Image (tube, rainbow, N blue to C red; front, side, top):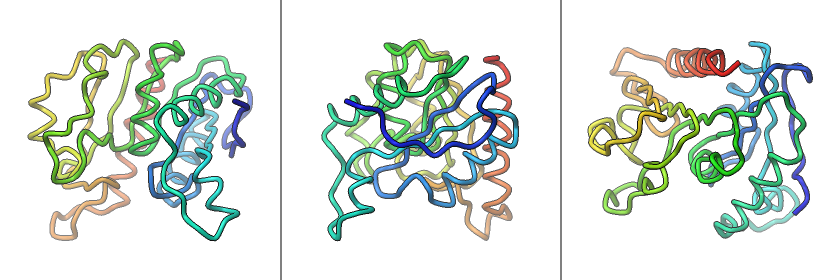
Length: 207
């Protein structure tokens, strides 16, 4: 499979390149993805965003195809990594994009993994866990999670017994997009800023 098209932010000669994939339902240029990609760039890191084939097709077709098969998603991630020249590579992304990244991280020997809202299980289906492969993950990882994420709340996730390779940082009252409710006294900007600062600090440990 050939490499996908990329959207770059940050300096080409950065010490670390972060490759980010989108979630299942939204493209690589949503406000959420823009915030983190440009934030990494401003911090001196290069960020490369890409889209899975089904999402790229949505830009040119009237219909909205669903996500590609898991083998195709995995193959796309491998091609995305191979297509970027970098001193060090960190991979990750939003929800599904981060989940698929976590499945190739060890085999691709990347420097780190950043998940922006890991989908531990489908909403309302806590028995359908997507954690088995995480238990043997060796790649240093940062999971940025909203404390009331319907894909896995703080109470649920803290009971999973995730390995020491995975650091989980909780965003107060955040949903799957890390957004808090108004009644919490927090703002989306506060949660997103905190998430970005935490991710940048994590990248600093990998330099």
